[in-house]
Image (tube, rainbow, N blue to C red; front, side, top):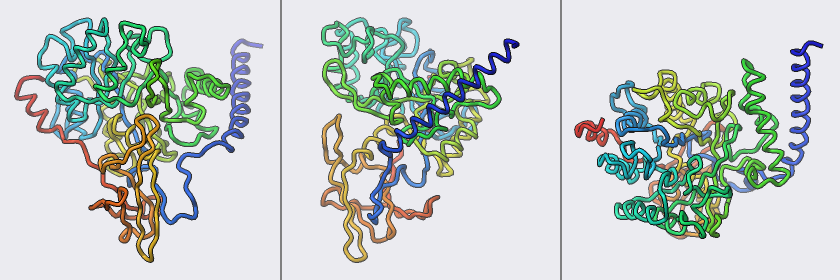
Length: 465
């Protein structure tokens, strides 16, 4: 038999075996938990996403290869403002970015670089919410240097909700031998002070899923989200089969892939020093593999019309893994990726995909997930009482209205529905028209981040880019 036929036969057998295994696993899921399950007898239920959205997405870009302030601001002005930029009119989206505290080359963009404007901009955008995660302490050499970095951030009232590991930085946290940041016996140990000073709750260690949309039930077809009929063998080999293997390991009890068992967006994790955090999952459904697509050009292949439509259809939360600084130079975002981002902006403005920063998406997700609430009906009036958030990481607490932004409740009588935090009624809740499921609702209104249009004009005037 010719080698090509043998190869095709082997692949076909592998595909058939995969499908059989997946159908077997699906039996397991039929008896497992189901996201968003509600009491069918209740006149009130909680909506999965803020009204009117059907899914949620964020672009989680590691700062690697963003070498200059000019590059950083050029990218963010296009993403975050409606200004006329070098790439045309900006998108006006809440797409965040990250920062390095230190770099080997002190002339490259970082908090502690020799360019004094870098620190000014990083502190400004942390406070405004557009820099929403720290990408390790990168080249910091010891605990003393880390303390110096934390002092600068604390003195400027900078808080960061999200920590993302970088390559094999010694300040990383997690189970691997190079991860010394949460090891109390190491001179790189910092989580006892960094977690408190910065306030981060969410940690990304190293895992990226090839399934489109976390926080939703899996089906057999979910494992084929990265399958591309134009590149069948490549997409099966670089993504689909790997997802099946990792899911199998999760079912067999492998801790590294435990989140895949239920397609979680977040899970509770314990650092080496005993502190608890939410570990979260990033994703990429490029047919040619996760790593090769994790750059500015590759982002175009993660935001195609079919992928966005599929996300709308299946629901779920997507945290895209990428590096916007890995690009081909000025203007830093290729025409194809610009077009893909404009398509995403349209889906956002059309009310289909909720687009926000990584920190805001994660906070919404866990606050909704652990929300304690009850409803009562008195004649024509419906009262919804929010008792608290039973957060397993931060501890149970009574939320403020800002903790509840976007929370939406289905109700048949929006005009007569009232929401309370404990016994205090929230004023100005929004009554919504029927959504795509023809269901009415009320909502604690979203509060957008402060627009960056004027801030970017200020940076232009100062000659920063």
